[in-house]
Length: 142
Image 1 (cartoon, rainbow, N blue to C red):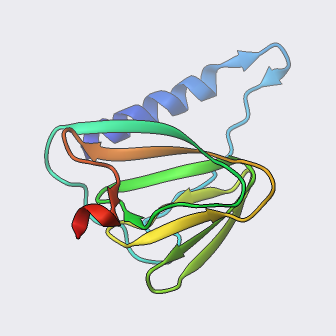
Image 2 (image 1 turned 45 degrees about the vertical axis):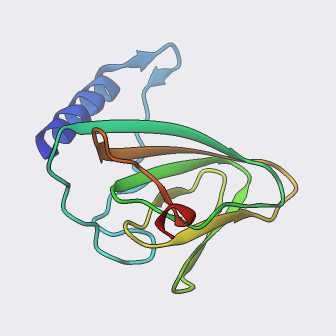
């Protein structure tokens, strides 16, 4: 899985370096590069198995709380619009707004809430394993 991700990153970087638009040079800005989730926990090793990348665009209506959930695999995202607060079961709290990156907590119960008056739109990338859920809702564990 690690080799696959490295190859994908290299292809993406090379494409970005050699792509030139009509306005000039392509700009590459690193939004996140870390070995830790947003609460400071170290990210786990990649699971063994057939890799499966999932990319989701998630829209959360105004004044909506998400269900408690956890992610068994590494994932990261970028807020497109709105503001979101993420809270773990240990009360670690993160406030996100449009343009912010997030490297999500793994194997940690948490939820997000949109307390604002506009929808939240976030794109999330999951580095998972084929056949394994990327999100586990708390209700499924009871």
